[in-house]
Length: 132
Ligand code: THU
Image 1 (cartoon, rainbow, N blue to C red):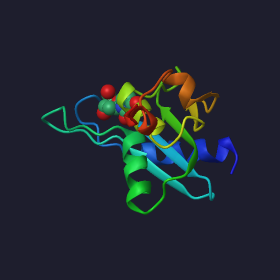
Image 2: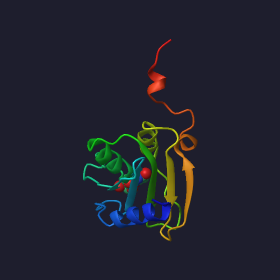
Image 3: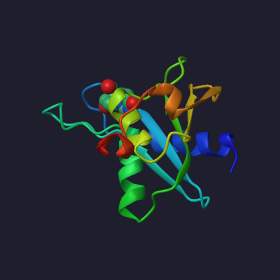
């Protein structure tokens, strides 16, 4: 699957974003190493802090379906700026591998690509928990 296809899926799922508070729609499409795609949108809450980001929705959907090996995640918003995952989502992506590519797209479908380890330098992971 090429990045344009993945971005298209992220744009499509963005329509399902539940954003009565921020009105800021985000869509994500997570590509597994086996070629499957899991999409996600942000889901807000009147109590604000329970809000779930689009990237996290996609990750949780995939992992709960038994997937753990990912190659890329595309993220889109309605802005002309490139979508940039929040810190918590960077951590959640990094959990599954420093080489995962993050495709940040804008509303025009333009995009740039980073490795998650570059977006979360010196990130904390399973290795960090090993003692001595
Ligand atoms: N949001 C995401 O879905 N992903 C991010 O990486 C950044 C923020 C959502 C959360 C909230 O619903 C809205 O954008 C405004 O913060």
